[in-house]
Picture (spheres, helix red, strand yellow):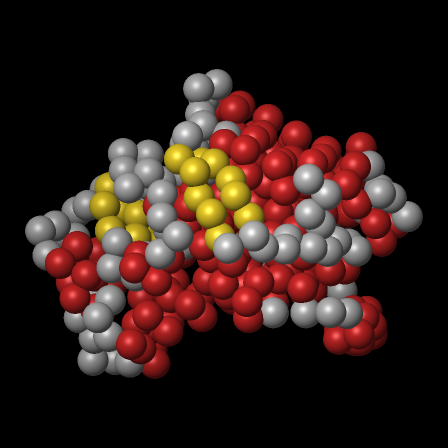
Length: 301
């Protein structure tokens, strides 16, 4: 399977923003020095940085809008497109038991969205799952997961952790837990912010895919940092800007971030997928869709 790289630390959704001294890893595993409390316009992406009145106004606005990417058929499509880039398949449900070390410095990569032992999100998943289901096959690995968090180490995990993960993936409750964590940390925040930025279904997907790949960090390589850079160059539709122009710039900045650490990194998830949808004017992300990732063609009728 071809993986695009692991997710970054997910503290932003796992802890209150008032928690200080939290830092995020970039997709390449380097500390970008991002503080947990943004002092710039990127803070608009965090509900915890807003007053209750502001959050209530945002909730009313979102409730008045079409479901967009949150509509069941569009959400299914989103998972398929992400899976094409993350696993070279449209069968995203077949990835619950996926686990391997892809030698990206983040330890084991696993599950439907690429949870990693080195980037905190896999640990958070297992902790939350264990709290709800104490009698599970991964619980005994929690001490080791806490020890290897932030590193590429397998210490305490080998040789049994991969087999335990695959076995647990046969349990519906664990599959549900992966879905819940994906939505809590990545899908829901990305779609919510995209709607507040005035973006349609394609733009909501662009934000979601960026959240998956770059993680919810506020540094220059994190999702919120990338968004802030884009907003310096173009207004969002909510600010009176043109949707296509804003998304084009956002994708340029994403691509640059992907190439920054590795000039040879494959960027087809942007070049021959999202950019293609954008240039076709498919802002509603309507099927049928055809796109390429890693030179392989995918179609959704």
